[in-house]
Image (cartoon, rainbow over all chains, first blue to last red; front, side):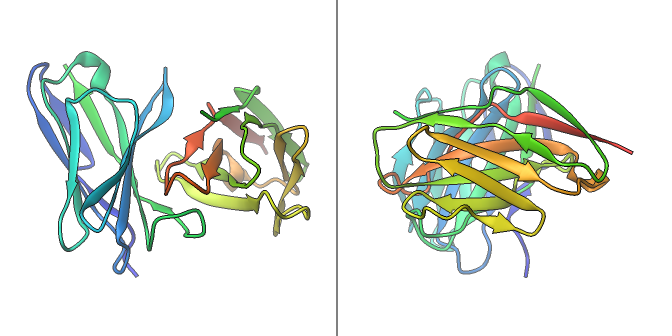
Length: 114
Length: 115
């Protein structure tokens, strides 16, 4: 079966612009979570969506937002990009929400802000 | 809040040998899940092994096993018969039973395998 698909794989944006990243979960998975990975801060949780509702949110400024559609696909948006937003953004999908459910990651979107 | 610490930024092992990666965590919860993930250059995080805190028995998956010491809050990963394909970043992660699908990751350990 198809895995978690993230698009685009690479992205270059200019400081001050905004960007939208997409994540298509495994068929039947209703939960999507997003993580930011940087060399300095490591892997940090951004937010989790389940059935179109945000369930958890990490400690990120309001410039970072997300949403989930009725087909479980999710998008995250970063407005007014800063150089420090350069990172690998990973999403993961799960059938449900809660620690008993397995988790599958995508290959990420590499965002470079110049 | 929970924290996860991996004290070894880099480790090296000879092919076919055994290596142990360390992980400690801090939590006030009594029930939780612990994971080891592997991230190869392809960037995708791959689940290596999972441990439920309420289980005293250490988890094992083929060449991978853990040493879970709940009182010491320690969760190390042992890789036996190391293979070149094991070379990757390894992340230890904590998941609360009360925080949905949120994972708290350690800083990672880069494992190099020498032929």
